[in-house]
Image 1 (tube, rainbow, N blue to C red):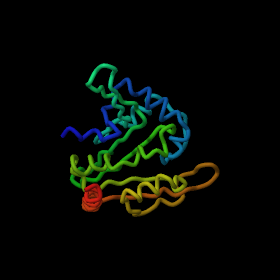
Image 2: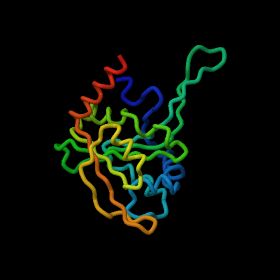
Image 3: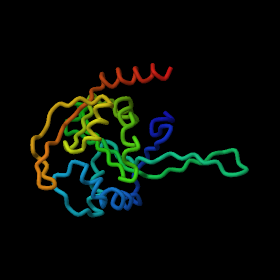
Length: 195
């Protein structure tokens, strides 16, 4: 139970009212982060929209870097964390299907450092929330995200053709999913590699 909301380098913590500023300033105001997050249309951000994006989720957490520091002359360590993004699992309207969509947004200062691609988020969805299926989507121009999702085991299951208009061009949104049974096989392979 002690490892449910943290890994060796990331901590997942509740989003408090004070964190709305981080969601607004570091995520919603950043055009790169918003542009890569499958926008229906790019609009200006509002604090209300930043807070509304996490309401109604099965779980919504801040993704924080875990830093362990030891003070001089003391042997105990103090846990510090720096917020770098957020993750939410959407609540499906038909809960008995045990299906969720994962939404991950990482501040552009921390992108390309493998912070959004750990299996920790998937582990929580499958091991603790007992999801049968997790889906994720990305606009086709977000090649890095799509490569990461495929590396994690997600399988492309379809696309919405030319649904996203960006920079004078229509783009597809690619839908991928991972089933619990597939995740168990991948997790077992990872555990065997560590041994």
